[in-house]
Length: 277
Ligand code: PXL
Image (cartoon, rainbow, N blue to C red; front, side, top):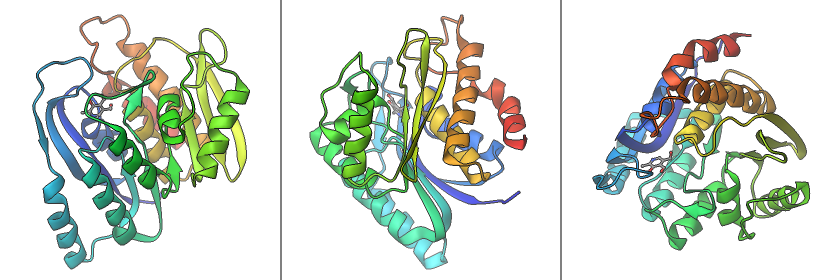
């Protein structure tokens, strides 16, 4: 098994099972050396808690990157999620450009929107900066809402394959390479993921359990990156991550007190089993 060094750049939400508190354990479980760059520190995530604190770490990033340069530190993969500010997105592009080892892969989850809306912290300027980052990455993992913001296509609750193909065409036209489009469901009770890899589109459909379970985007992206670095193809990694995420939702549903995230820790043994098979 190849042991790779991955850098993940996203926020620390101290409570809320998302971003770094999800990515770090999942990538470690996949057997990767996991380095982190916290984009911000929040007391909780921003989706459902009120009065959360935020410390944006944008101004620390250039010094951190300069130190890594001095130490000759490089990464085999760089995976980004929720970022703290528009300015930070441009610093992150710079880190991908300068700190990637030969053959490194860059994976961008443009974590900024869901259910037709941008997350509260973001605006149009952030979307423009995210376009620059996403369209220069090797792999992007948008949900439909994020794909809409990246392309300017109108958001629709109901859609068909023509709408999804149009989104993929526009993402590709704008520079996207491998695309993992999540949350694509064509019939009630079903959802899935469309993978566009080397120009070939494949669809992995699975059961839809609950609507809008928080934190599943981060669980999914982290599980995808772990599987990819373990040598799975993009389609294999995308389907494995979907099965894992579904398992996380399954063990969480029914616990009304656990509305803010999923109990992904309980399913890590199954994730490791899937990676080994
Ligand atoms: O799960 C995405 C995410 C990450 N980090 C923070 C968030 C969210 C979604 O709302 O608020 C701080």
